[in-house]
Length: 384
Ligand SMILES: *Cc1c(COP(=O)(O)O)cnc(C)c1O
View 1 (spheres, rainbow, N blue to C red):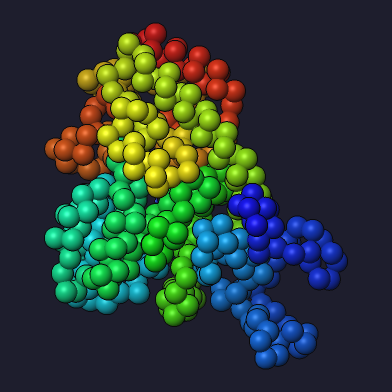
View 2: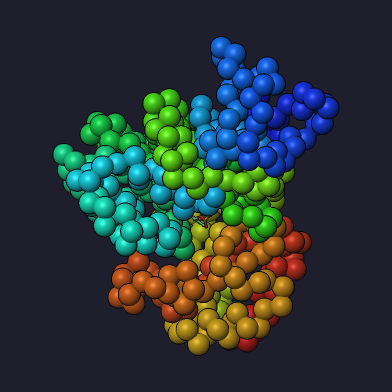
């Protein structure tokens, strides 16, 4: 089955009681255990809705299928999913984490989980040798994002997967920026893929959620055990919204990708722009890796509109259509200023070392007519 067919059908079949085509929102906390569905050999046992919910099950199967994985678990947020993965570890274990991962991931690892005796090394995973050198006998996980936000630095997933396999560690790839339509980490050797469904998978900026998928049945069972114990499950309503979102995922990603490219090319050729970061540009230093590993370059573009926060503000203030907002992956174009928004809590020197200069802005190109998005950006450039 092709990925568009999978997106629309995987995990879902008409409701057996009514034939309802769309998986209902099973708003129930518990299940009567006398309905005949219970306890039969091979039957799924529905007992309590923190543990199991049919709407959530449908979404978990849907996203697992999209990522080419056997098992999936849906969580209350992307962070809850990532948290569940690191909770499979024990005090004394070591994690190699990308040096420029999502700020919430950095905060969870450094300021919350590290208190429980886990240690983290932050490594530029685009340098495979650096990943190998950071390995310790206690290393249990490698967690990375590619492309990174907002610098669009890529990591060779297959190469890191090889290092991880040789060392007996687990490779976790956060695929939120690309979605399974544009990048399939499991096929490249990742052991676990995590998503914030809040972004492209739901795609409409109206829900928060996360998923974790894997092919390792024992690991999935462990995730399920922790998920049920800690309780950060995705609600049936959110699962229904994300199922609605993934039906159009392929069509949306194709248009995001097409518009993203056009916007990136327009920006890269603009006399008011100093630098543009987009994996699809010929000037991107890892363009060859992008072509090899990704099925498209996405719709996230970062660019420098000057040297100062003031210039970035002037640019953003002049926009009428693009919303200045955190988050990404929605149908509407969102634009942000990393130095004061998503990466504002990072010390200035560290931010600069990552390349996040005061004049850098990041756009998540939405599904409006691309001419309108470009015309809006021109309002910003005119104000510089
Ligand atoms: C948004 C995001 C997260 C966190 O997801 P939430 O749903 O906000 O908890 C994790 N990783 C990446 C790459 C993200 O963009």
